[in-house]
Length: 304
Image (cartoon, rainbow, N blue to C red):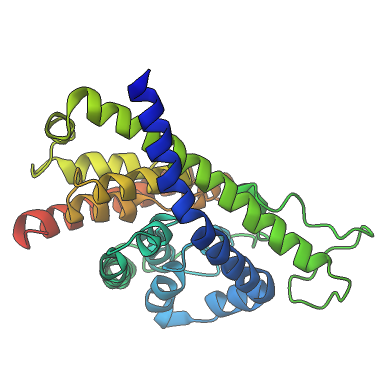
């Protein structure tokens, strides 16, 4: 019982420390998302040869919008598969926010973002040049960011569609921004609290050495395990990966591997919107292989 009480107290305190930062960060991200959504899609659809570079830069913003938009634009034949992969590879969901909000981890967050952007660009260009030179044009699909479950519909109170560019002056847009930010904040707070409590109990019960060994710390296979975990289309995975890294259980190479393959809900949206399932599996395979090889290189060769 004392173990449970201590785990709840420590987990709650750790999560509460993150709460103000998460709310402010999500408010800012939702504001940007709300007032730039149409511009974002327009930019992604007109970038041409610069696609992987621009896609990787856009993708490193920690929210689901860009990976979802990229999946839809690819299904519509608007962007190349290299641009799609660049966005997927650079996306980190909430892991970056957790690192920035944790004392002493800001440098790691910047390094993680830089590594993922560089890898996203490089792999995107290689894929476009060697594997998918002539992407098939498909019927363009509309954005479906509601798949992330945070906006609760795209209709205004009077039944007219919201433009997403700040044109409505009745404050409804601000209500949606706050509602979405609060939704994300509460959701991630629950993830952090639950994970911290379980991790504290586990560490007390078996010890960090046993858990690190179980997760193959410092082994060739840890990036493989992390990359497979990253394929799960849920932001809780990025929270788990970040927390494992900050607890010293995952190496930097392994957490990069998991976050490279973790494209948020973007991968799920791709399978929903793109009817060519074999092509979807091929893209998933390239994503997974890129994540594994990159993680192994960082961990074994560069000793990160």
